[in-house]
Amino acid sequence: MNLQHNYWYFKSVLSKDFCENIIKYGNQQKDELALTGGLSRKNKKFDRDLEKYPLSEEEQKDLKKKRNSHIVWLNDRWIYDTIHPYIHTANESAGWNFQWDWTESCQFTKYNKGQFYGWHQDSWDAPYDNTTDNPDFIGKTRKLSVTVSLSDPKDYKGGELEFAYLNAFKNEPHANKVKCTQILPQGSIVVFPSFHWHRVNPVTEGHRYSLVMWQLGLPYK
Image 1 (cartoon, rainbow, N blue to C red):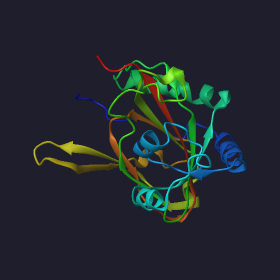
Image 2 (cartoon, rainbow, N blue to C red; image 1 turned 45 degrees about the horizontal axis):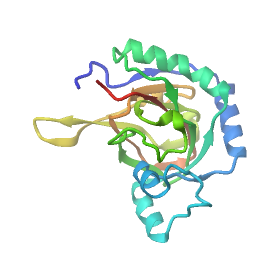
Image 3 (cartoon, one colour; image 1 turned 90 degrees about the vertical axis):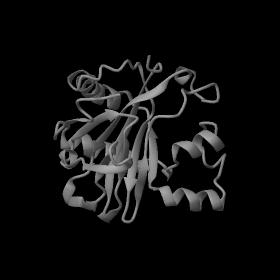
Image 4 (cartoon, rainbow, N blue to C red; image 1 turned 135 degrees about the horizontal axis):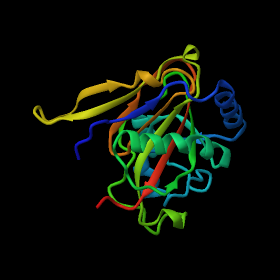
């Protein structure tokens, strides 16, 4: 699939109060160690209750080679109502026009010093099936991903969102890397197709807070 735009961003569109309210709200909730998609699909059958399905020491060790962060799941209507218009605008303005009709739980993510998320895609190798705990997901796949920058860039160093695109001539999947510096300002949003490779570089100082969302739709035709 050839795209004219690999991502679409909105710089500083959300108010400081909105961002600070989510940070405060998220920090009031009990957080948990973030999983990778493959681990949650394989071992937890989409049940994100790590108290019910604790990771083994080997799983934790392997996980932290790929991803090290803490998360809180949020499902508040006011968050969706604020972010959804930007997703619709990006989908149309970038010329993707992907069909989607559902959003998963919002992921409030905390990256402290040394934490990161290595190269990954948000989309699965197959649509959600009946192992999911949400029947509205069945038969659908992740099509659009969203990251909202909640932190003031003065509060942390490192932690940049970075994309990687296939260099077909060199056959090197991570040869062409692009740092999404446009969303460094607090209240910025980036929307991108969920099949794009991306990562969050290690935070070297302070704390980086973000909000991540995934939009689902029926498989591409």
